[in-house]
Length: 123
Image (cartoon, rainbow, N blue to C red; front, side):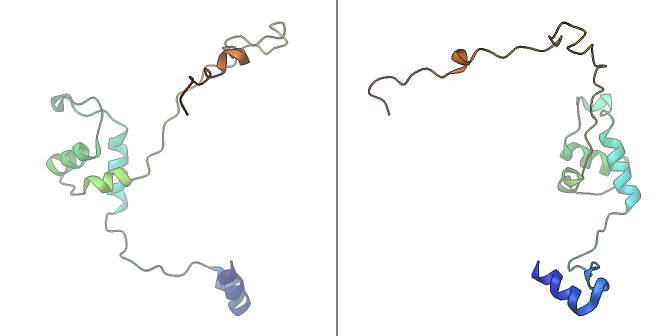
């Protein structure tokens, strides 16, 4: 926090802007990243015998069939958004069902959730 305050006092709002970061810039172009992400949303070809992609299999497939050479670590580190399953439409509320929500599983009584008492002679 002190760094930001010092930079603000020294340079004003311009001091709060991002500065160049050390390290090597990304070497994989955007279209290649987009292709890999698109491939993650598909199932592997039937000839592979796979039901889903692993990072190693995808990197191998890209190298053999699409002439894209990336490591399996690069594939595994790509941020893949999880596709949420569509939820069923909500049912009638508690007022329409007489105070009970349909479809909910009731919790077990408190006494049933307790763990058994320790056996004698054990810590």
